[in-house]
Length: 386
Image (cartoon, rainbow, N blue to C red; front, side, top):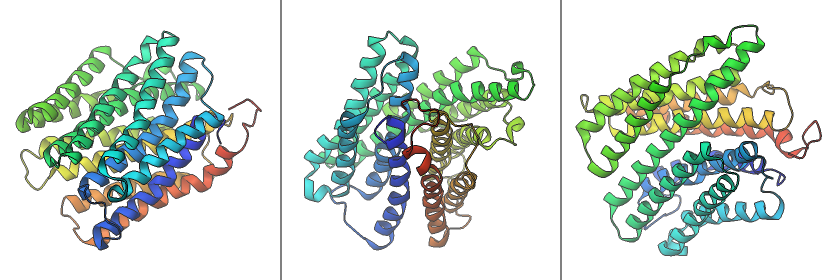
């Protein structure tokens, strides 16, 4: 498992997803453990972003830079040390009262700092300027995490909340960036293998630039200006631009291929989250929690499970065909997001629907572990060294 970063980090991502939501529900409903002095909702969102999401990002980026640059993978004892740093951060943040918030902050930030420095070093060493935006987004995530910990250490809830929003919108931009590279490319390749024209998939540089410009303006308006009305209109404009982008990729042609439609679905959840964020200005029942969970469970959860299932197959020399029953992981994550959305919108506001959402989420990632454990723990089938 330590031969290549995606193997261990994808399994850790799924394992943490299985554990973290039931743990959160236990804390929320029964006070299973205390995370004082960290505010409960900050702990919840922080661990989903800097625990769950960051493990997936690490698995993807530490693997992708080898393809981008031709460099050797981080492996063996060195990879084991990095994994240990991630684990230590998760344990420390679960027991802040034991470790103390200053030590928790140091241990938690250490993993992201390493990831930023290592990825940036490899990209600069190989003069891979095209992928430097990845380093920039990691830097923004590091800044967001520092802001969250600064707020925790100074009992400044507004600062921690602002840092949480900052990190969520950076992850949103990361999904749009990575999705914009892989979804049209994978779809075009698949269509070509089916004997159809790659030119069916349409992309526009002007549209791409407009999307990212709008999203960065949204981040600035939200985090630095707290401009609610401006943010709402920017979110609505972003959703329209991203929808135009997604329609050009013709996801409806991929309904027979789960490895592809799941990526289109994940991207659609981003659009829906931004639409809900904007509509919250006009409909007070659409609270910020609604768009945040559409992004978190819907977009982030779906894109992560979609990328992990595909990368795991491709980088172990296997055909791009889902293992038996693995598609249920997609269905369960989608169910989790829909149930959480229903709870947030007040359509069904009982603890039952919240519990169903949490169980579906955990079961979805448990399906990944069960079906992909043999793939991620065994040698590549063509005997290559990944």
